[in-house]
Length: 169
Image 1 (cartoon, rainbow, N blue to C red):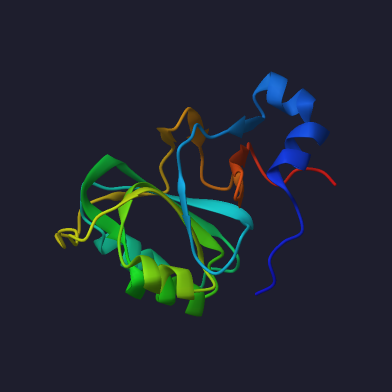
Image 2 (tube, helix red, strand yellow; image 1 turned 45 degrees about the horizontal axis):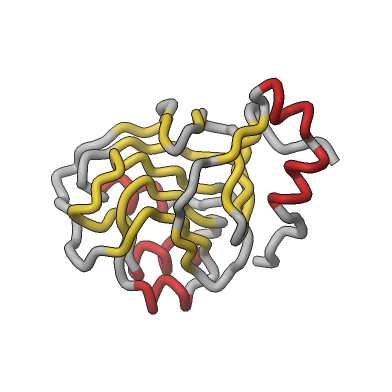
């Protein structure tokens, strides 16, 4: 998969009207960046889960078709919601990347994958596997609201949410 050609800074500059009216949102920092891609973009698939990544695996097993998984883990840093095995799965099934409002693990394995990851922190502990969580829900964290189908743009400068779909060219 080829990295899309954009810079979040340029998107913000070109779409100041959307920033003003809330159709383009900038996620509050800080975010750690992982993966062998510097930037990724695509339509959002949303999950909300309580320290249980069973639904992450189930979702990443489906064809990604360039989508971005947005995981609201409640900003928990007690366990990792994505690790090297899940990043490899996401890469192999065609996902662009994941935004994780929580922790991840296996930094070296994440960095070896052509799958972008943004997360709050690293932690070595794995999550529970109880099958808990919700899919296709509106999630709110980092000062942004993400609905399924909103467009995510992420690079080293941060990540953006374009309400309702991709930004016009």
